Length: 143
View 1 (cartoon, one colour):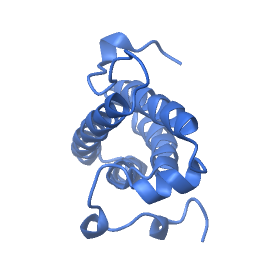
View 2: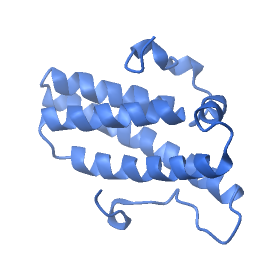
View 3: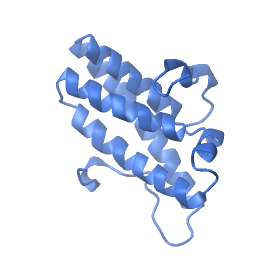
View 4: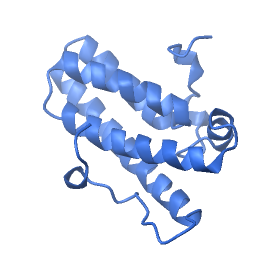
């Protein structure tokens, strides 16, 4: 099975939470510091790419969705990966209405996972760091 294989992501019925804890643990080798860093980067990337997809041409939306799909699979954010795959497929067919609907689904999945990441990081914070669950487009600098 390859990283781009659709079967790598669980089905919607198999997705109990926003982040697959076991998958994230394996991908970060149990290193809590690395886990925190990866989740922070993923949350920021989600906001940036969704912002860029909003009014993008289908080819750009597909490319951004593909990037986000890979990142989501890396952290075990299966709902985000599945929604990003739908954007990618709709954009590949050039159907503007389908792309818009798929982006809306991706935005919902992205908001859900960012909220879960924020809660997770605030529970595990070693210091007075703020949770990132309330990230919005205005607070993110382009990468």
